[in-house]
Length: 375
Image 1 (cartoon, one colour):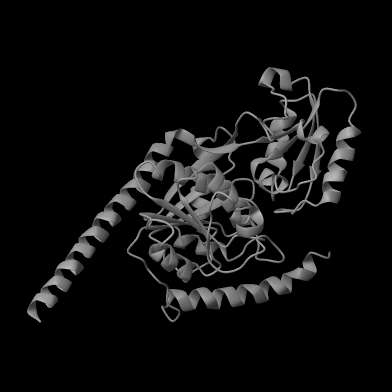
Image 2: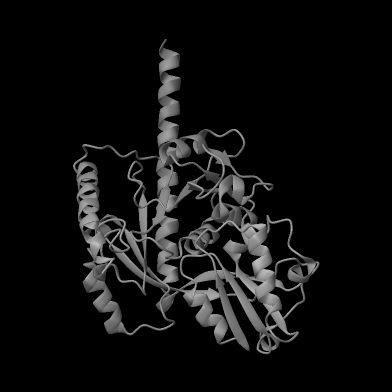
């Protein structure tokens, strides 16, 4: 009943968003294009669709050949303006997801700026880092001030957008018709197998256009890692089966991880915090109390890699918790061997646009030299 009362607000929100998109589509509001290849990764729903692991997947395939930069707003950071991360940057300065990317890929440039246009311009002119060959915009599907070369839209398999409604009645940030702006559509968090008819139904419901590519991915959890390498015990998958687990999560959709770990361990308790939660000393005390209440000696605490970026900044973690604290990495896997096609399309786009950019620069250099010689 309470949710129904939100429906009029969804209608009002939809009118505002529709006018905004109409102004951009009609070029009344302008979008900025850049010669440097720009790839946007985002969604049209609130909640987790797997943006971080998909961005990391892009970094992995691109960093072998190109100088890669990521740009995000740095959600919940305690700073403002444009910042380029270094090895000492933490989530207070740049947010948890950029911190995770910088620590996993120290060779790439990681930057934050709420103003994406300004952030890209500063990245291209930055003196503290080489100019990137390609820029990845995190969570930027609604940031239409930038017109990216490739727009990647992520949709959670478990939350079909064609059955959803606009905020605040539903989960949609904008109408499902705006799927048409995407060049690549990725259905995320899929089961390990999807029947061909299910794929066709999804494509039909999304009204896939000829210029759009549709992909399906699932999340694969890696071996749990000790959070404090000098403190934690080491466990293999077979040993894990005899352990009770306190799972600590501060992410939007912990259920897939809960389901996965429940099959791998003796017993599991999920201690759930809000998405992007900043852990306090009292939170650590609560975690310790819940952990101590679990019977037996064979027990550990497991958290997500993103949550660990925030937990790691808490200085008052007791040694008894440190030696039992683990995190679990996650990575993207494309179904039906579609990863090769996805990789080729991404790499070809960057290669072609870098070549065009280099050719443009050479032409501009020659024009400048010709003008100078004629004066």
